[in-house]
Length: 249
Length: 259
Image (cartoon, rainbow over all chains, first blue to last red; front, side, top):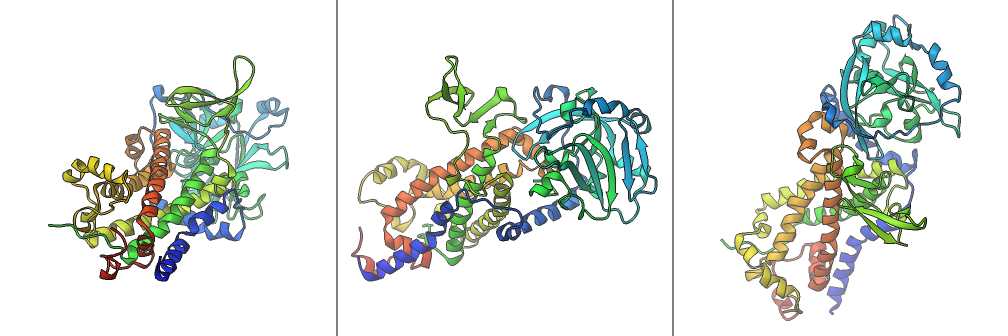
């Protein structure tokens, strides 16, 4: 082989070098807050910005035959006496609203029109399950409590918690996403009262985002101007772990 | 009209090497994501009765002994002492689910824009004629297969054009497999599903789309070793051309080298 060939083939090798180098990175953990983590933030923002004009689109609804035989659950821990407290359960709605309110389950049923629709729950882990959720539209609740102009986020406080850290589960949505007509506060699943393992007595259902946005065991809803200062400051238990706040992809 | 011989303009070389980086990282981060739920289904939901594939996870048999058990196309296969609960760290990227997702969803953009650049340049420079398979190419496949099993390798068809196997591969990967990866990947997004419900339905539902996405990835994985083998056999001069561009046809002083 002539020297010229040698040089060129080395250049070819160098150009192909990124592939084996990536293989060396195999298993390296990309951690929230690291330089590489932040360097990839643009994709999440781009996806959300592109989806924003279509945020009102309705997801597919399913007939009864399509309901899943099994619906997996990824729950955190509940206090042992949680079921015993449910008789006195009330939903508190407070924060940046004109008319703070508190509702028992019977009052929620009576005050707001019931919506029941079967949608597909897409978990960030990769699985999907279909069930019918019955409850009230978050939009109807917002209309009743009247958000103040400075309110930007709606925070859902849950009763379950992380047994390791004691951190309470919570989640949040941008007010514009919460107003989607299919965003429900469900007290029924597949026509029966919401089972305990699925978040009884009341859970959020956000069918156009990944499952971790659908907070279970909701007992307090607060409207806020900013998410900073609340727990990890990223707007939810899973968001504080590192998962995206807008979970449309 | 005789198709032009292949050459490698800068945009094509750039797209190719960006693609190498994007695809390797996409496959590895994709396996990381797969590990969070290592099973595939032929349904809209994760219906256990329609499981297409699981890794050979450890299971306890009727005899009470541990063995590997995987599902392939609905059949349960006993893998004996071989077990693999998830893809090992060496072949994954990101370290945990959202680490993998973050890399995957960012590089998906690189893959998409890069693919559009490649296809755009091919069309604009009318290079697609060089790789577009014709009926005559399909008829010539057996002869080309024979050529490929014989050394020294005949890499070029008549008058320096690509041979039929090359045409089929270089047509199928960017024109069929690449778009299939994008189409099936988009179907996994709940927001995209709300935008175009028919898109996910067309693929048999969300979990079926996830299965097709995995199958398309296997197609890419199958192409790479064949491609690398042919590249290795083609020799250093061809490798260099894929980096530096180089002349579209061998220069006269090269003529003594091969053939």
